[in-house]
Structures are given as C-alpha cells and as structure tokens.
Image (cartoon, rainbow, N blue to C red):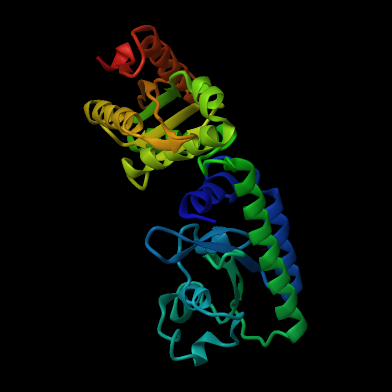
Length: 324
C-alpha cells in the first residue's frame, strides 16, 4: 500500500478524520479493548512526520487524536508485538510526560500494522494506567486483530484505486477531494481541480490495439505524476478521463501546472506495431474557493472548461471564467 493509499485509508475510513465509514475499525478496537481488558485500545498511523499518531479507538478522546504515544515509535520498528508491562520501571519511558505525569500510562501492548508487501502503516495498541502482564493468548489475539485492520485498509484501498493506472477511482478521488475541501475551508485555502480528457483516444485502440491503449493510459498517469507535487492527487474518472487535485495552489500557478501536464502528455511516444503512438489532451481548470462551492460544483466547472478546450480545437488548457 503506497503513501497515497495509506493517506486515503486514514482520511476516509478512520474515526475522527473527514468522512468515511469507521464502523469496521470501531469494532476491531472494541474487541481489542475487551480481549486485553483495558479501557484504551487504539489504532495509530504513521504520518508525514514519520511518527505514529493516534487516530481511532476507545482512549483517543482521553489521550487526544493526533498524539504520539512514546511506545508506538518502538513498536513500528519491531518485528513482533511489543510489550511494556510497567512503563515506570522501563528506562526508555519512565521520564516521558505521558508516564510520569498526565495520564500516567503504565501498560502498553502494540502490534505493528504491516501490509503484505512489508510496508508499515502504524500500530494496533492497548494501553492502561495499571501495570499488567498479558498472556500469550492475548498477544496472539491482538496480532490477529492487527491483521484484520490491515486487511480492511487494503480492501478499501483496492476499491478506491484504479487497477490499471494506479490512480484513484472516481469514488476514491471524490472522497479525497471532499476531505481536502473541508480541510482547506477551515484553513482558508483555495483548492484547484484540473480535468483532463485524452483527445481521440479511440484511435489509439483502433490503430494499435487495446494493449497499447492501456500502456498509454499508464504512461499518461506516470507523466502527470512526474510533474506534480507529493500532495497533489490524480484520479481516473472515466475511460480516458482524469481529474487532478492541486491543494493550496494559487490560480496563476495552477494554470501553468495544467499546461505543463498538457505538454508532458503531448510529448509521450510509445513504440507500437512498428510505429509510434502519441496523443494529446484537452484540459479544464477550476478553483474551489473556501465556503463558496461544493466539490461537485467545482468538478462541474472544471468539466465545462474542459469541453470548451475541446470546442476550441483540443490540445489546450481553458480556465474557468471565475479564474480570469
């Protein structure tokens, strides 16, 4: 599971984030709390800082969402469940504010959340204010629950990621944009959407075959990613249609980025059947200003600008009139 998929799992599925169904994760953390007989059982996820931060489960409201437990950093680096029977007797943690003061945490059991390809997402952990020694059966059961957390995230990631190109699906993209819209609205930032439609894509399939068409779609997504920031997101919303989200980017800069994407697509050359396949794209750009539009309204305005680009001869960028 890549960084983008991990962020989507967090933003759309974990309690306390913007949107998403958290019921599966709620059930898992409740089970973990029951198995361990602790009041607190939580999922922590590794964020951009590299530190696992609390995201969900009974106890987050007490310790605070986004907090980083001193134990979890050790747990994610471990190949096995990490047990701290009494933090006050452990020189790694006895002086930590969460142990020596505040909630006065004493017990910790954390299992790293690892995908099948070895990526570490965070931990499933239980903590308590009293020291204790878990049984081997309890540790095994918490490990099983941790695998359930990862499986749920991977299933959601699969349903929200286009299997051909690796871009988000239409549903995944819209969920991600909605979460980002809420964040930008709170912070007073604008959000730019770039709609991309490949010109005469059917000709590629008819002339060179669907295998080349598929390769072209993958190449388009790769070319776009090469010209985007890590925080930008691309979604495949139709057969040859894509939308790109550019958070916190001024309209003048977004227009230049959109034209750079158009040029990168036009520069693509794929060897095919003794010939070379190439393609162009029509691009529409619209901004979602804080508090003034819904996500769907902004997507519609980007689409309208895209159709204007096609009407004006294709292989060009057209801005939503509100940006001019």
